[in-house]
Length: 137
Image 1 (cartoon, helix red, strand yellow):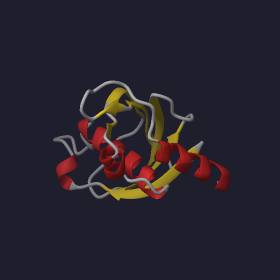
Image 2 (tube, rainbow, N blue to C red; image 1 turned 30 degrees about the horizontal axis):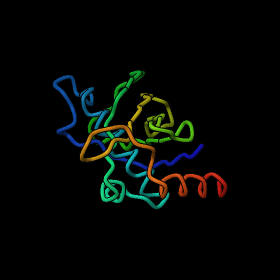
Image 3 (cartoon, rainbow, N blue to C red; image 1 turned 90 degrees about the horizontal axis):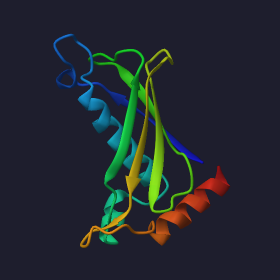
Image 4 (cartoon, rainbow, N blue to C red; image 1 turned 180 degrees about the horizontal axis):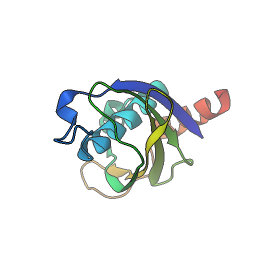
């Protein structure tokens, strides 16, 4: 549907005793990536929250293929897999500097009311931006 890529540099504090990026940091990397995708299409997460909607993660899976290390520059590509209903599904692909896929992940967020925590439809403005960007790609 819609994809967005950007580069990140691995900080020393992201690594473990083995020198690998610690597995817990992949969730943070992918969280930033999905917000960058939304920002790129014109609706930052802060706007979604202003509309009274939160997007908690309800499912996340990773496949670790190769390690990443301190000072690596990685490219993360985020794709929205399908048009959202009460949930939105993302796919992530992380590549190292030579273009090798080192990690893949899938993530599902729900849309919930920020006060009642009850499931919601996606905000209309998000659906409009997704439609607009799907047509222009």
